[in-house]
View (cartoon, rainbow, N blue to C red):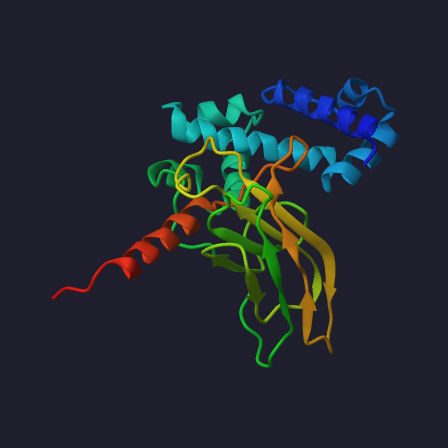
Length: 256
C-alpha cells in the first residue's frame, strides 16, 4: 500500500479524532489529507474499506462507548460531546451499531449475554463459510470472535457469528445469499475485560454467496489493529467474557 496515501488517510483520521464534537465536512478532511475531495474519498475507502463519513460516525460512537464506561456524563451530554444534536438520533444510532442502548451499555459495563445473528435459518440447508484463523506473529491472541458482516466494519449485528477459544478452524453455518465480509477480532489472553487493550483483527472479503454454493473458504490472519482500521462498535466484550465464564466452569473440578 502506498505509504504517502496511508499517511494522508491517517492525517484525515487525526482531524476526525480532534473534531468529534464539531461539524466536519469532506472538504475539511480532504484539506487535512492534502488531496482533492474526489481523490480523497476514493483513496480513503481504498485504505480503510469504508467511506470517510462512516468512519467518522464510527469514531464518534466509539468515543461514546468510552465515555459511557469511564465518566458520569448523562447520555444527553455524551451525545452532544460526540457531535449529535438529537439525543434520540444518537441513541438509535448507538443501538443499531453497538447492539444495545447507551443506558444498557453503561449499566452492564459493556457486557451483554449474546450477539444475535440477523435472520433465521432457512427451510433448506444453505451454504457455509469456513476457514482457518491464524494467530498474530507474536502468538499472543486469546479467544477469537468471527462474524459475517455486510461491510468491512464490525458494526451492528452479524449475519452469522461464532467464538473460538483460540485461533484455529471455524465454520459459519446456514449463510444467506449476498455479499459479505468475514471479520475476526481478538485480544491478548487475560485482557478480555479491559478497554485499553490494542486488539487484533482479521479480515476476508468481500465474498459472494449464491444458490448452488455448498461452502466458501475464507482464511483469516490476525494482526494488530492499525490507525486506519475502522473502529470496532459491535459489543464483543460480552461474548468473550461469557465464553471465558463457560471455560472456567468447564475446568472446575466436579464436586465429590
